[in-house]
Length: 255
Image (cartoon, rainbow, N blue to C red; front, side):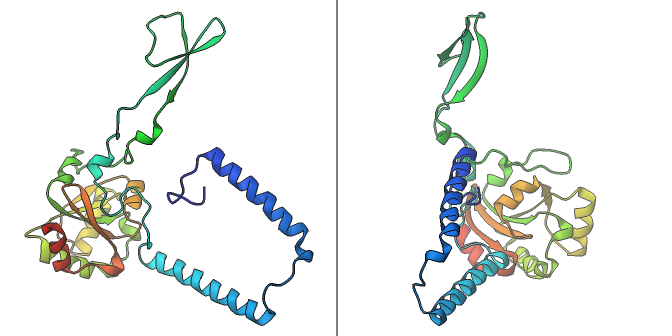
């Protein structure tokens, strides 16, 4: 639904919500001539204007920076390795058919006369919150676990050709200032040849690795964006318009 990760709804819940809103909007539409103004016309226009400006300002700020509240799986203080694991053992129920009747089993039956129909997860809330985080290098070696070791500064570039290049001067200064104490990893969904050329153009002096584009956009919407991890825990994340001071990054990883 349109609430995204802020209010998680199943498809049927979202559909039901839309139907209820449609009925309420229908009431407003059909009885629109019966309503009286709550405020004088001029006051109403002022209130409407202020509301539009506030909403427009909030939208522009959220686009040019990161949102005020992060509802995504990689929000600050998230322990990524822990979020990749189920919070408790997942429990399933198997629906099997025999002689026209449906039977429920906690374990898959050994009786081959039962016909499999469906499987139901009984505790979906225990599922891992992150299921697709993966990092690999140019030789396809998996470096996911390596990204959880010690202090890491992740420079996320969804696609090189769409990145805001004006920010790389500040990013390069940050890398140079923290490189002795923080391991820098550049993550991208661009192909190797494209990003290697881009890296040289921007003088990005850090090793680059690959990740899925959707995962990178979920981690941080900004292109490029920055995250600081320590042992896999997200300590900070920034839009490229708000590149942090080197000392701030060092203070985060030293705590």
